[in-house]
Length: 248
Image (cartoon, rainbow, N blue to C red):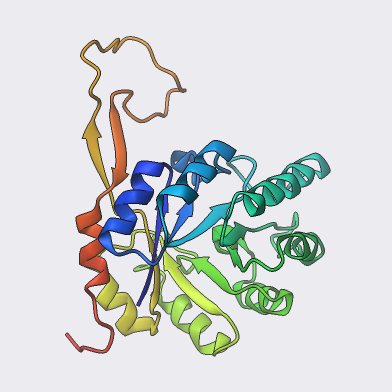
């Protein structure tokens, strides 16, 4: 089994490696589904871990339809990630009618070369997933991260199984979205997937002694100001201990 841990800090990268993860996907703003991490975070993460480091390149939250200016930002961020030692790029662009934007993706993949590309969960927002699968394969991406177009990968096992069947050995289908040690065996059994993506997070209280609870740094929908989330190495280890060759 291959296990990728979605992280947003150097601390989480260290914990993911400690737990036995095969690689990490480094992001910022996981509350928004992930955006491009800072150059400083990429650089220091690369220095702290030896496992694979894939970098999410996404200029903002929201949809995956990008303006020409946003596309320029994406290109620049890919160049920065490559220069700072990324092992792979995670990216996805759609057209206004919910198809894979193959023209823009081809440009980004040429820029990313020779790094492998993961087409991220923009896939789950496509109007025709089986067409999107073929488009992404034709581009030469190495994997698709998907929940099977459902809230969680466990709920999306029907589509995940179909994607695996149609993809064959042409591309890897990686299950992500609510993946835990508890449901990995069932997802594998129902789909045949052996590559999983999880945040494996725990919440820890801030060490701030003085806490100004009447002030908020974000909008109305927000995480607590004095609670941090970090990867739990024990959760990672528990997931890695799953053996797909052993029937439960």
